Length: 184
Image 1 (tube, one colour):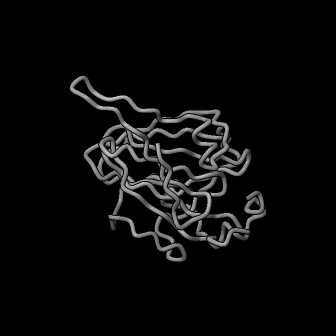
Image 2: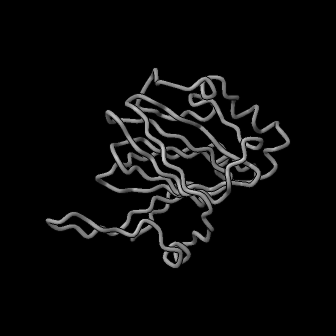
């Protein structure tokens, strides 16, 4: 297993070691001691699994109470995984990072609490699994508009399929004015 640093502090791409032969493959998705060696000392308390069709964009989502970090991976298909730093005291506030992850390349993205996350489905379908550091709390979740010009994410799409929630999400600037933004 190796962990690749990104240009954003505390945001990592995790590339597991995969052992393949004619029978199939084996890999460790998460191993607490290895993650801790790389500086990722999070306790995961909830696992989620979603399936989406081509051209679906989900995000940019986050939760402030309890603060929720996520380890995201694609287990079927291919998707563009994105994380945006929304930590007010961070030197990289407002910066984004994206990577193409797939069932084939097995890349994972670890984004701690204080990041908004999303993805865009590149294949006919994709299944995404998230290992979370906080239990879901519908009263303390929010989102940022996927195409907010202040962030400038270079999504591989112009007209994605969006939920109503994602179509009407607030802007990054609006989020920074909310008192909840001080949680990070």
